[in-house]
Image (cartoon, rainbow, N blue to C red; front, top):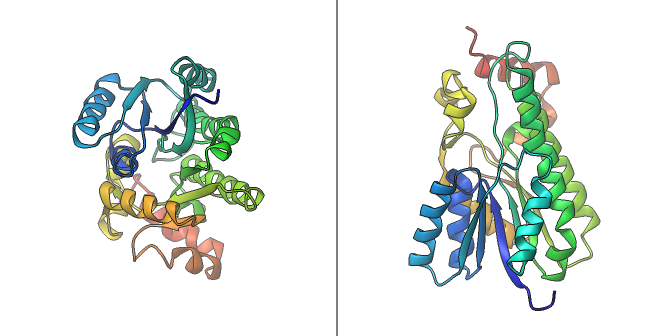
Length: 262
């Protein structure tokens, strides 16, 4: 496999933060493999990147929540003589509402994508990433730092992403590998509509960043080997405030912001 081409694999690359991270890696000269469910959107973005940057950009339409998705991605890479240098685990979604009212199977599907798939790909390609002196960038959330009534399963899944990434970073500290988790706050993407979070009060009370700005900060700090990346000046104190505040108080405040049942 020594003749295989190193590429940056970006999941959830059909829009939002994933799309803008693709531009950042392309600007660095990285060849790309973009992965998401929508072939049409990926094709459009791949064509745009190849027009703007001198990199090879391919795509794979794949539902990463499927149990065999990791094998399918690995086989695609092998057939196209590619190896992973940078892995960006951006694919994921959230659901806003009372857990007992939200669809149970959809919440389990969220865990499959946000947790199982991210873990599978991170461990599956870790040796390749290390051999190519690259790294893994996992997209978590500022919700990772707290319990989140009305987004309980999503918040728990992102808490897992943060904890997993920090632990993996600790294990890889003596190897030439970058391991980072980016924790954005509210971001102007399709996430709010998909999760129904746009019906809550969160976006009215917390500053919203653009996906482009989040991607720029995430890429910059990932290349600087920062393990936990919190985007936005207003979000940076959040981890420290959460540690000092009583947990019942954070649950109360977050619950009021997230509650769509009012």
